Image 1 (cartoon, rainbow, N blue to C red):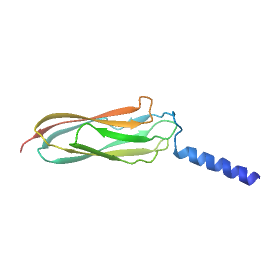
Image 2: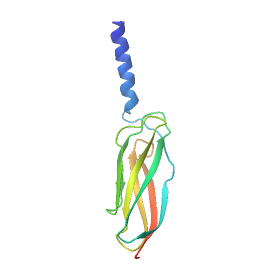
Image 3: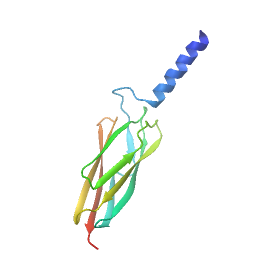
Image 4: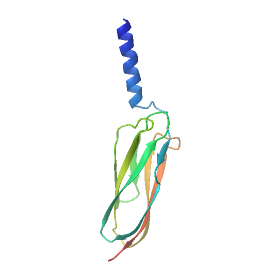
Length: 127
């Protein structure tokens, strides 16, 4: 009976370590939340990464990463990050039309404000 109780205690602690309960919030810190790409050639695709860390006390769940147009695509690791762990959002921007651009990427996660905005700024030029 004591062994069974210990196993239940151990397993319940392990499952809590990798998931957040509904309503639990954490905090997130990005190395940078604005990226200035400078000049991007028309038609060129530029890859870059936003790195972040879970600075809170519960696992961080990045539920979605939304971009504001089809010229920007994002991929991310969908498994929870434990407190202190780091992750990254990989983004590709394609310069589809000439001119200055400001693109917003919305990171939907279990932080207090629910959404963390990231900015990508630059100029698409014809070479």
